[in-house]
Image (cartoon, rainbow over all chains, first blue to last red; front, side, top):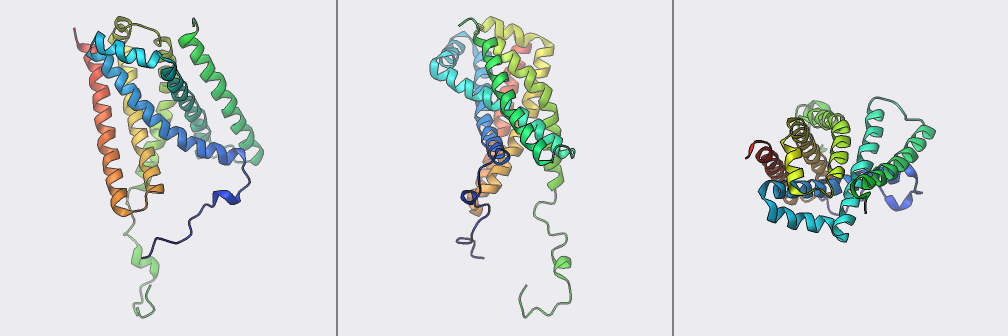
Length: 128
Length: 131
């Protein structure tokens, strides 16, 4: 079957952007990002298990400015995927499908993500 | 269906039992099950790691020597890597259309997920049980 040139749906460019659609896309992107986070976690755990020299090296990289920016992205992705995942679980249970509720829960997810991410960084680097 | 096909079987009868994966609900269900488990585990994980952000190695190892921390971390790793594998599988199935590339990606996804899960688990066990 010639699968090459058939038009594919969805045509993202013809839609007016709205919060439900944006969060759905970010959910998937953050999920892929979290896979890289799991790679980072494995590296950190392996470093902690292997000994002081290697751990200090990994610790130094993660504590650098670039390292902290990456960790901020990891933390933000984690909280977004968590909050929006709870939203998805509510939908799976049949709740929150009304347009207004969907919009409000989306806004709540964004606010919660920002608050939790900043709060967690305050716990981690509060003294800095 | 070909126009020349004289069979009296309906299109539904012809495809019944020939489903693509035959286990679609299993994927769906495990993804939800791990999602539910990951709600409390992720909150614990994020707060624990944050409080260890500037900790030195002995503090990290002492934390992982606690049976409670180790059990929660192993639970997080099991649910997390499983959920990750299922999620990446869907992304690959959605965006990779060439058959051979898709199969290769799906196999690599399985193998890399299992490899990382084992490596992380072993690191936790080493800290928990080692000297």
